[in-house]
Amino acid sequence: MSTPSSSTAPGGRARRGFGLIGPRRGRHTVSLDELGSLGLPVGDDGAVIGVDAEGRPAVLGINRPTPYEVTLIGGLWTAQVLALRAAGTGARIAVETGRAQAWTSLAQAAGGGQPCISLHDVGRVPPQGASAGSPVVVVRDCGMRPPRGRVASGPWQSVVTLLPYLSPVAPRLMKKSALVGVQRVSPDESALIGRIMNLSSTESQALSTLADGVTLWCAGRDRQFVMTQATDAETGLLGSARRMD
Image (tube, rainbow, N blue to C red; front, side, top):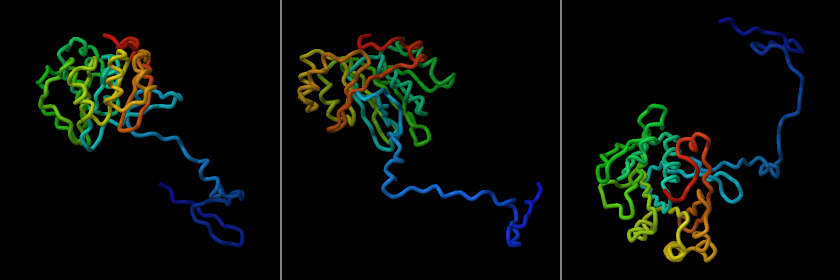
């Protein structure tokens, strides 16, 4: 490797390694009052699960160092899109399901040949060994009354429970979950969910009229309607958004 050349600056001063002096320009500076204009709209780290009412990306940070429980009262399509996108963030997905045939194509197609989505019978999910370098999302697709099993959330292992409707176990699951998603339900169900989640009358009434692919996500007092829009690859694999299966 050659050594840097040297040159002589005006006044006879040697400038080693920097070549000729270039043109002088003003420095790129901003005043303190102008700093606010440089802000960037950076959201949370996680999977993009759709867009909000203003068309901004809605991001779900599902890989966490603390236990994280999610309950989704909705359709299989939305749960499968969430699983795919969580896998895209580097998480391993363990699906506990009594309808493995509904998940087989997804498990085979995900990960580009890598086994990132595994399927397990109800009550048969083995320890996953979750860690910061290998986070896990357990998707429980166990029908209206998912049994109490040994699957639990923990550090770097989140649990997403899918309920097709508001079942008798739903209130307990909703109250212990950090995040609850609700898709289109009947007017009676929407009224009950509104009471459980302390929704406004407008939010509660909207639940019975939501379009396919729209979910009301609730975390504490935060509420956000999100439209999940499938990519071309997701549509080819899962079909169009639908509430019913």
